[in-house]
View 1: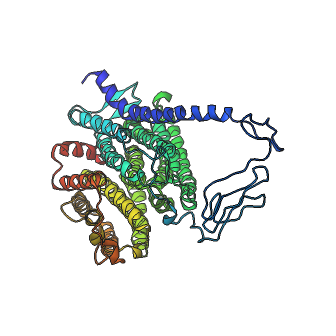
View 2 (view 1 turned 180 degrees about the vertical axis):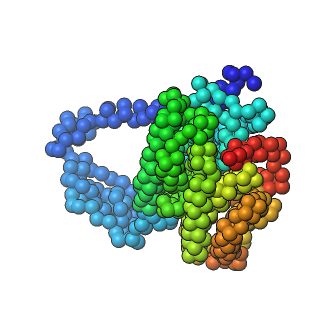
View 3 (view 1 turned 45 degrees about the horizontal axis):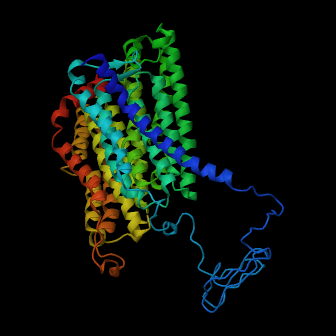
Length: 597
């Protein structure tokens, strides 16, 4: 592979999504120009009355307004003031609609719905301002396809020839990078394929849909940059960029609950990223004190090579801050409170991206620091930090799943459970445990994408996120019920899905590494989570629907566009659970990078 080809493969996963995001921004600017010209052409309003010369075709006296009405002509004075009418402006059902100069009166009606009530959403937009399900909507697949293609191309050479770099070692791809790049591309492809089906049911107009797509592509670019960054400072910047971009995506619907969730997400994650920044600064200080040149003091490979010369006290403090900071973004306790709110309020494809890969990308950043800390301090210190955070998160997730009444929040707490298992595998630290954790990252991303996209369709059909109000999905929407049910079965760690193989590998690695106590406690909490998910999902999927007349005209059909991402994700997760095939060598090499110490 030539240097130019390598540079292209390392650049395209970031450059193509950024170009797509810029294209959406340019399209929005082009649409704004005619509106601005029209706005400048309108007369300016002032506080007082505006005097205009009479039109040669109009009489100088006040014009009489006439129009159809149920009982007689509608008349009124154009100069009298604000108009009123019985039954509404202009035409009323009770007789002549007379426009007068008094205040506007309207007939009493039902009380308005609250901004957070799903029934407050109007029907899907139609007409020229509706989100178009044309080729433009499907162009969103270009970015995920590029990420997948570059990851596949790098997977054919990196495991055999070793890491590759570009632009003065600013970008770097080793086996761990390639595995995460494939995971990001696969999950993004499923989520972006689901976007047209979900945007067709949004209340947004074409401009809001364009802003949504702009942010999605910027989100993919930031995650790819975090995965490919060789410099820990650039890694930190990229992960912080994901926080900024996804804050607007969480608040996309602009309801009170979504805006509150977005602010909560920004405040808590920014605090965590700030702690990670302090840890990065301390690690830079330790590197400089060890004699590493300034230009290489944050290069990950250089730090891992010379970490045995670092000050142990400074490195311990830095690693403690980094585990707490990046653990916040990965959904680990104690700073996890943003996750259920953000994942439950974001649009379904955004929740899929955040749960499926954003948490894993943040944890992958933590893995880079872990290799440096293990070389400087030995594996024991980081193992204790990660194992403690993992068990605490697993206990909280299991207990909160038992009392959960919202199915999107249920899926969010399930993400906490699976991230704690990934952290536990990393804490064990053997190549088998790390390989199982990386397999868990890929399988969890695929399955959770299916689960969140299916939950978005359930919300559209039932107009509620309450578990108690969803019954008989198999009877009302068979394809949707099967897809959601199988996704939960996969999250439970049942065969043939990949989470079964990865959880089995994590258990084997824990007992083989003589951490049987930790493994036993983790299995206990996993069983509690298993029972909670089974009981709630069975209520949603099985039994008759709450309103039998809802299926009198036949079951709800999901449609090919909506069903394709669900089927593809489940098939990929099942295939990955049976065999990793050509990815076996890549997975083993990635496990060696983190678990070799």
